[in-house]
Each structure stands twice: as C-alpha cells, then as structure tokens.
Image 1 (cartoon, rainbow, N blue to C red):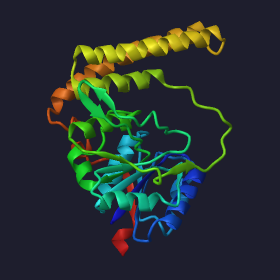
Image 2 (cartoon, rainbow, N blue to C red; image 1 turned 135 degrees about the vertical axis):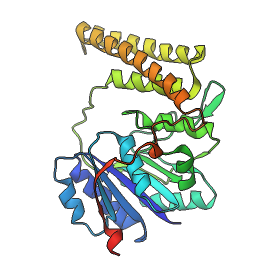
Image 3 (cartoon, rainbow, N blue to C red; image 1 turned 45 degrees about the vertical axis):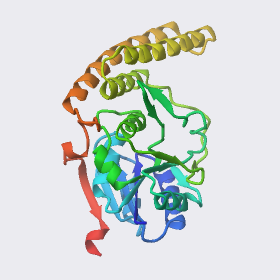
Image 4 (cartoon, rainbow, N blue to C red; image 1 turned 90 degrees about the vertical axis):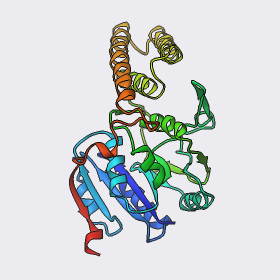
Length: 301
C-alpha cells in the first residue's frame, strides 16, 4: 500500500510536532507526509521545514479545514490518502489498520478519536431513505478513487465538513469501514474547558448540507426545525441554571435564524449547481489558487 497522510494544522505547533513524531515512528519510511499549514502565526513553518520526514509543506491563507484537506488531496501522490488533524497522535496499530482494510477492498476506513468518538455517534442513520454512516475526517483514510469521485470536500462549509462528506459518500454507494485499531489521541494536557459553540455556523452548515444533498422537501425542513427546537429548549435550561443570560440566548437565536435561512438558500442553489450525485459545486476541480507557498522535498529527490 502506498499511503499519503495529510496533516492539517493551525497554530498548534507543539501538538503538531508530537503528531509528526508518532507518524515517523509508527508508519513506514515510504509514507508520504504532507503538512497543510495555515494561516499559523506560531512559527509552525520554520519548525516543519527543519524536519526531514515531511515531504511537502503547503501554506494556505484560509481558516477552513475543507480547503486544507483539498490542498492535501491535490498534493498527494499515493493510492490511499489519510487525513489527520495536527493535534492528534496515532496509536501503534493505526497504519496496519488502514493497510488491512484497504487489502480487503475498503473504500473508506476510520477509527476512534480519543474522547470524541463513541459507538452512538458512528451508528448509521437513515435520512430521506438513505443510510448514512458518520465518520470523522480528522482521522480517516480514503482510496484515492473515492476522493476523485467526490471531487474532494465542499469548501463552502467552515464546520461539519465530515458530515456533508458522509452524506455524499452514501449517495455514491461507497462503504465506510470502522476499525478500532485505527485510533488517535490528543497528546497534550488541556485545562478541561471547551470553546463556546458557534451556533450560527453550525446551523448554517446543517441547513446547507441537508438542502444540498436532499432538496427542499418537508422531511428536511422537519429535521432542521426539530434540531433547532431541541437545542433551544436545552439553551433555556442553561438560562434557568444561570449558565447563560437571556440576552445571550436571544442573540444565539437570532444568529441561528439568520444562518438557517442563508444556509438553506445556499444549499438549494448548490444542489442545482451540481446535479450529479457527488453534490459538490465547491470541490477540488473548481479552483487552483488555494496554496500560498509550497515547499516540496520530492522535487529534489
């Protein structure tokens, strides 16, 4: 198996170094390592360029993981392409899990991200008669022909690109293989805090991907509305408990409403912009100006 690993990073230099150390130790020397950076301001470029185990460093200017993944896919030269968040460290069995799955003709293989993926989150779901198996694009490997069929990732989305990809994978008839040995973990201690969710971006993504993949049908509207009602009730409970204020709840509600409307409209337009089953009017083939700077060691070999 020829494997390219695309590592996306943004201002997490120390975590990235741990991630690259593990890749160097736990994958064959023939593995192609591609780091897509940016736009970082913590000295990532310098430390990555000093490493002899990184084949390509690509600098981008957009804070969008789907842009980062598409750049990596464009750069990769192997028949299997894995995507890894620069904050995660692979376990010992990670490479073998990918190799065994691909030998068994898997289309896509994924595994656990420590603390983030559980058995419930990866259960297949039926949406408008279509069975969708969720997976996390921060730890996943594709047969490159699958990525070509998908035209990569949809760059309209700034969050939840993995979920959109899962919908499109299902529509094209590809299978997702789960392997518990393909595990990653977060290797740096945290203070236990979590960033506040960007409800506007989350609901813009939800409305966009459902409208794009399934059209403006009542079941789609019902699913979006049901999700908004559940989250609204949950937010009311945080007001009662004193965790948030009525003003904050109202602000979030207005942001959700605005982004739902714009995301839904954009999703409908995207559906008709790409009428094929891949549903990706913002994919790899659409543009070629993502990279600001490329440092490619392969050119000198």
